[in-house]
Amino acid sequence: MRRALSISTAAIAVALAAAPSAFADNPANEPPFFGETPPPLIRPPTLSKPPPGFRLSARQATAIATGASAVRAERAADGVPLRPVAFERGHGEWQVNFFTGTGSSRTEVALAVIDDRTGTVLEAWRDQQVTVKLARGYSGAIAQMVNAPYIWLPLCVLFVAPFFDPRRPFRLLHLDLLVLLALGVSLYFFNRADIRASVALTYPVLGYVFLRMLIAGLRPRRRAGPLVPLVPIKWLAIAAIALAGGRIALNVTDSHVIDIGAAGVVGADRIEHGRPLYQGTFDQGLQIHGDVYGPFNYIAYVPFEEAFPFHGVWDSLPAAHAAAIAFDLLTALGLLVLGRRLRAGPDGRALGVAMSFAWLAYPFTLYTMNANADDSLIAATLVGAMVALASPAGRGAMLALGTAAKFGPAALAPIFATGTGERRLRSTIVFAVVFAALLAVLFVPFIPDGGLRELYDRTLGYQASRSSPFSVWGLAPSLGFLQSWVRAGAAVLAVALAFYPRWRSPVQVAALAAAVTVAVQVGATHWFYFYVVWFLPLVLAAAFGAERVVVRRRAPRRRPTVRPVSSPAAPARAS
Image 1 (cartoon, rainbow, N blue to C red):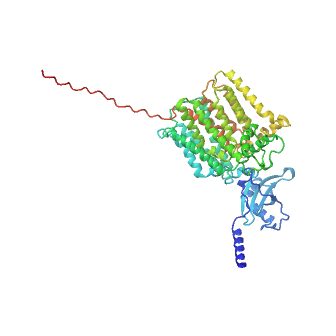
Image 2 (cartoon, helix red, strand yellow):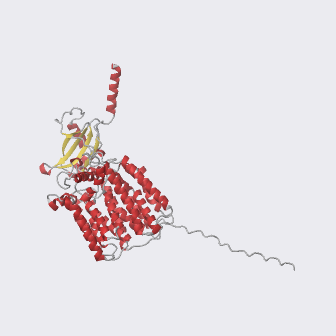
Image 3 (spheres, rainbow, N blue to C red):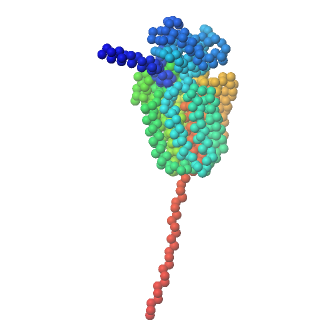
């Protein structure tokens, strides 16, 4: 038995030595991606001797980290000495942070994580990727399995296939769909931490959508169609139901709650317990400013938080899953109803099915839902504003809800105030009164003790001042003067489109609203792939609604005309 025990112990030791560090953490499971507590960083008592349980000393780990490519690049770029500080990172890892400057001017410019057992560099970062974990391309950090080619690529095919007309391969709708899918190329580089390439590839897509929607709104043109040339609309409806079920199953079984969704649940919990939203510490576990959104964002999570109460930790938040699924399905159902508003009769039903299917098949809507983000809530409110377009009060209420959630939809207020142009003054006044009154009802109960100034500082003020590597403005701050012009241009465009064209169809309203939404996003310092769902429903309504025919109908078969054959004359009787 002693010999067997010795052999077993030796085998376990060999296995542990051969395996990766048993205590190695997974950054994709830590904030802002998930709720696992990051490993503690501890300064070692001495630089020359390995701490207990470690093989390397702090000095050895620092020497290895200094040779990492990102650290060398940072040193070569700045041309100033970097001051390293080594930390024990949990069990079995080292983290070495590199700084420039001293005192109040000290800035962290690079870091490297070292495996203590093997001495290999596990990860190394510089510039904004030091402080913005979202830019590091951790595998499985956002939306998990959705990024896999065996899920992403079939969705791309499904998004295009029902609307592809082989007899007219060069029709504009094909290009629209392909450009929307082209954003996946940007995501490919984002997932590989190549932020410069991902940002550069984002703007051509946004630019195309902006110009395409602006032209569609100002110079509408009915296209011959059909929108769905070959697939029976019943098959498309069945496929949409199947897609919805598959998305729900994937969300439940393979998704993390990113900090955005967690903030919604925490805010709902604060509302239920009578705690203020915009003063004090929002939640230490989130490690972000969770109170940067409008109050309706948190109110929308209340029913889900009541069904699945928050218990103080966000490593498992069923309320966030339920909310993300509900926002996604509400948008799909809203598009189904919107089809009936844009067209009458069977064509309206078919148009609604087509738009709902396209929403459910588009990979970025699943990407947003599987990250359990809150952006589909904005999509649902904008679809609701389109559904209620004939009612100034209705569209004013729906747009107020979106504005009270994430502020950005406020840019669409001028367009929706004038609607399609009929009885402009009266309808504009009704819209403005409802819009302003509902905003007051939603915001006033949550104004902090510091008043409107503190409310602004914690929401819009914080968002306006934050830095971000996910836009050209964040990567190249020297272009700030151009950003001011872009923002001013978006504001002027939003106001101008309220008056011109004087009369417009609902399809034109959707197109113009999509153009303004994209213009506002282009001027933002922080842009992320979740924002695609803000303008996607409007783009679908504008592009699909411009097709004159939704489904090709076969001409009824004509029965052959049967001519009566005259009977032969009866033979004369013999007299």
